[in-house]
Image 1 (cartoon, rainbow, N blue to C red):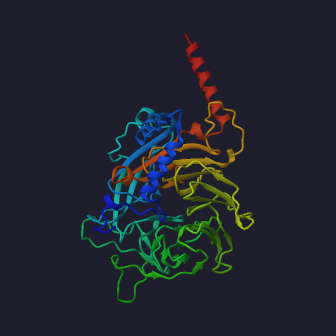
Image 2 (image 1 turned 90 degrees about the vertical axis):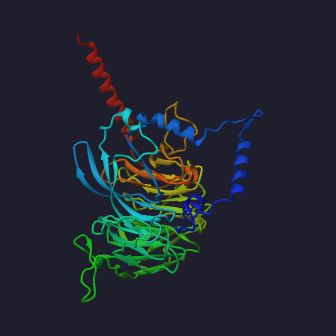
Length: 489
């Protein structure tokens, strides 16, 4: 962000969304409030702070572990890197973040070390005793790269997560070998770090849509030019590191700008900005994309550069995010500005020419920004939104009778956990593939506090996601143990 656009005035971009004008928002809020009038009395809606206070009081019950880390500058992305060390009570792992500044200091890509506490280690009374304004002792900055422009999106290479791709406000995708990159001190006027590779091919800015293939070192990106671009970086990786192929006489200068890599294919079919992309988990040649044209498109590079299947009106508004199920490559999730998450089966994507999802998940009150399948259970996924919530769903629970009278009748089908620890829009989150049921999430707090962000690393109590019969059996064992102990003289 340039210094002429201070953070406090404008704040980070809206991830391709088209926010309503302020007066229109106020009018909508007034209408909603009027609709809640009953017997001449206005229904009292809890404030953000009241909701947060209630959530924090329940942290010892709902969570096995939680760490809260205050960010001086917002981060629009958060991703897990490689696990570094396993110890008795905690594991150490890389964490990738960014710092989106107001121009007084450079924008940065941050490599942090995170201490991930193991299950059933943290004391319940300790995990809720954190200061919202403080940095967490579990998160420590390891290395800083000065990024050429804002970091809008970070994605790691699944086969080697020390290699990451970033999106900024330019047509290029930047590739970084973060372990080989020198640590930099982010001061005003400092030259930016030099990416190891520059992927070219877009004709206009590509800001958010970015994915790296789980099976091959391939990258896809989408942008304002309405296209999806595919690259291979296979020829530039050796021994797990990026190899700079310098010309004769140049030597191996790590400060030199990385070579440009042209695309393997440019795929056209969207009619507006492409907002997100995802690879098919089982094929480097198949991928999908979503955009502001409300379309979901499936592509196959072996067939050509046109859509394999184009799903019109996949949602009732712009699509912001998409993810392909790593356990079942027939299932695709999409999230939209219409506040819903939809699940599609690629064997039956449309009906009468428009999108025909298997199910619509309706549990957010604002635009959905991120969706991701869980690596731990094939039917579980998460969704985060502008409403400050990160919802955890299980589509296996949809339509099944739940004989719990205490369960709220208003709970959306499939929703079984709601992380409410953020007080502003949750712009990104990432399941941890090394530590089951552990999530990192980040919120951009510019609207609520005027700046900064909140990073949280958390794991819900296993009593929430384990099979009910298993939990009840453990409870019976505990009861038996208590009875046995109390009966002893």
